[in-house]
Length: 222
Image (cartoon, rainbow, N blue to C red):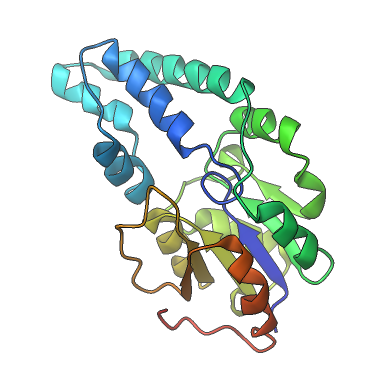
């Protein structure tokens, strides 16, 4: 029986991936590094690593990297404050699922950026649980975020579903024993997601999928 859905935030609920790319690109450009969208997708979205580490190739030390991350974070917050778009179909999908299953957000976003984003969206009342980067020891693709979500919800992994848009998110959910649905968008359509329970093109496809999950979701590939 499906009891809970755990949602990733960036790229799933809200259209922020390009803003984060822009913040990283602007920061690295100040030290002469031109960040491409392909590099960003591979390093940040797939591997879950910081593209700021590219500065190591120019001889930047840990303290300098920390300062670059602060610069990037400040730039990201400035961009977020200009406005964030909810991903198409999300609000209607959440409304249809609300009350049928428990729902939580499990994100690698910092609490600072998360709060700025959702100050505008009005989506938070749909959720019973919210975990941001400060809540767990290791970020995705480590299973720690989803293991903590299971601990807080008191549910078994086989009765939950994760909604992600990256390979690192998929790996995190799978490592915690949770079946994962991948939703595609402009930045991940060329990627493959082996081991996903299902890959969907529109988030609105989730509602009929949940209807079929009246029994335990298996971890079969889509």
